[in-house]
Image 1 (cartoon, rainbow, N blue to C red):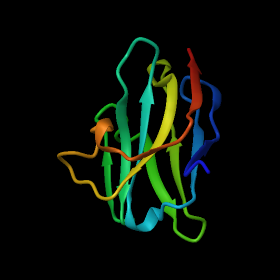
Image 2 (image 1 turned 120 degrees about the vertical axis):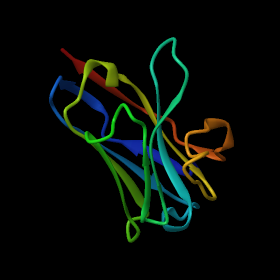
Image 3 (image 1 turned 90 degrees about the vertical axis):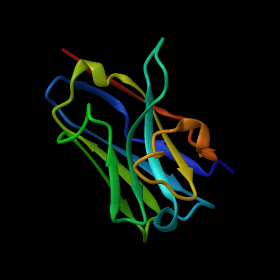
Length: 125
């Protein structure tokens, strides 16, 4: 059973919006650190946004003010709302989970235990 399943990727024009969902099973989103990563071709995987216990959120500087991470504990799902999209947001987006996270370590991909299969986001200019 895949513990994390992403959905909602697709194509958008620059300046547009897309929303991603990450449905978790076997991982309780309200008590773990759930993070969105992305990886573009030829680039390293980078942390985009994380949410921990529902009230701590972390964002990459490149998406602050444009992306919003949230969670629905009843649905055990984490969301990423992406507004004002730019072509450089084009990447495969992954949902990942770990026990806890803080400012210093939320974006360290190697510290995550669970990963989804990814969903593609393509932004055209």
